[in-house]
Image (tube, rainbow, N blue to C red; front, side, top):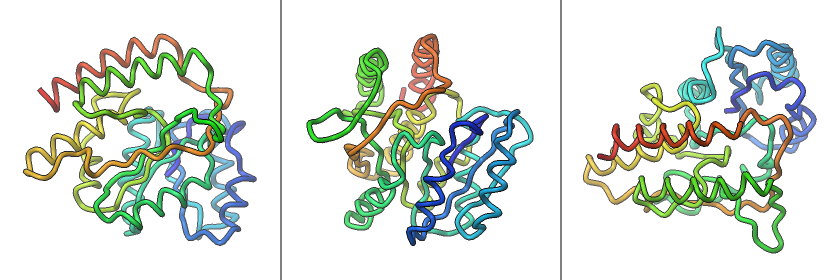
Length: 242
């Protein structure tokens, strides 16, 4: 599913159409999060062009990305597919990575979650602003300490889950965080597996180093949101891990 808030100018309809026409069996559910521009009209036009591939869920008011993703995953789970996931509307992670993520889950039945990781390695095309990269590394270190797992990149907006009951259950309750709900998902997974006496969460998570990722102009993230994220991280620790 793809959360959308005022994305009329950024959503790459051409890329989505090409991907659908490539023969992929994947279905996209777009969640319009109370947009005030032409996003809903654009999404409805996309749906009308290929209803087998594109669906639209429109929320009556802006509820924030965390709730848009949650509502989208719950709605998408009705399709009973093998995998569920969410992808940022700016397509900073190319759609071609979806097949790569599916391939990992196909080959590794022990895994429950594949997450994109923006690792700047030679031969890969990871274009990220320097300041955001270094702030991201500081944040990732803090997250690793809080969660107790060595995760590299929780905030990449490309994630694919196995559509199992326990994984869908991670989205049953509203998130307490608005900006770092990705971290909260991991915290819920850690808590649930610990309470059920299952192997540790890090044994079922796979971070996939992306071949390509690019910063797209128009991001709604602001510098002060990093301070807000620190407060949310503390709240996540108190709720799930203490």
